[in-house]
Image 1: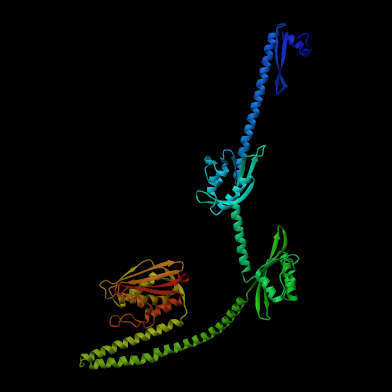
Image 2: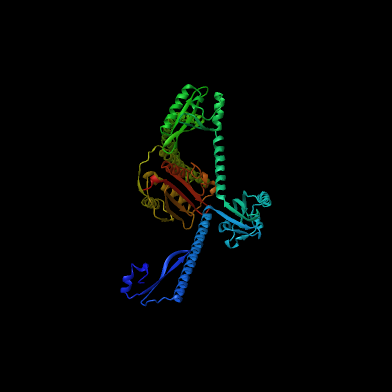
Length: 581
């Protein structure tokens, strides 16, 4: 150490530490010095020839170990990189729906990638396949040309590509693009075959849908009676449909050509000026519809719409749609004429109705005075005859007296009913809030006092209705009188009254357990002088239900009835929503 020049920088420091000898051996990696193996000692002449040889061997071993470590590290890195690349390849194949395969020409075994297995619908565990297995998956309609191309490729060892379909085991049909390429050795022998499988089903379906939409749109555009076209900002024709081409040819004798100024196809100079203004409005961003009226050679109306065509923020043209509305206009004019005639007829009918009402009033007066007087006289004379001759009359004469009195009373009742029936045509409704329960209880009490009966009444919750009090009371009187009358022959007459509410209005029901009626004759119930029972069974004029119908309809409501012979009847009326309380 004291004489070695290489230790000059550290000699004093080493001696101060008691070190008198040192040896250094190079450590090599891949043929280059990458470090030093060094030992120090406190004895002079410590390292002899054998020890130096031993230390050189140790340094060599360290260098060998480092070389091996570096090689293993590089190998591991290469493996990691390969695994990463394979993972990225799998991911890329999955995303792109592209699988791959390779075949050893000597063994004839085909190895499918994971994505290829997914495309063919088989498990990735079954990735070892054969050409025969592949051909079994090919669609029956495609197997012919697929086999032909594969056979030709194999025979000549030429690359090929083809589009075809496969049918998976679950019956799903997929569209594929497949390509194959051969690998040759130095002597030109084919040693390996590679290929890709690209699932293009979504693309095919999209193309098919696009083609369908195009054909459908073409069918709609070209098989309509409407005219459709578009122009650019120079009024040059971009697109047009078949009906426009035909009408232009018919009227002007010209043939439509794309790129031609559309104003040159105008039917007149005035029309060209009008259409230029229309186009300019669309170029300014306005979407609008105008009506074009032509009076010669025949009157017609056309509805024309213009829409700006945009490309980003720019307007590059106008789409146009023209539709004949002649039939609609003619119908509108006819409706207008009919309405005018209808108004005239309404005025005429109103005048007739006014005259009819006046005649009805005159008839009512006549019934009230001229008809009632002779009936009253007839009954008066019949009463006198009965008082003076009843005791001397035989049974047949007494029966005639009885018949005369009964028919006189019936004539008076009919006159009263006719007057009521006529009166409600002239009266104006005076609606107010009517407590139906309170009204029905009052009517029932009065009937029980004036005409005692043995019927029982059951009342449920009843509404407050907005109606003309006197008119609706007449409805209740008539319905309850009928219920009492037609159930009077029952041992225990039962009458039930209830109501139901809905969004359309309120309905009041009056049910009895009396004689009922045959539903086949229900259409006669509410007609004037219509009766379903004989006078010998039940008295009546046949006007009461007609009067009910008139009053309810005057309120804007409806009436109805349901029944069964000898099992009772239910009569009901509905007042509209604005008649409910």
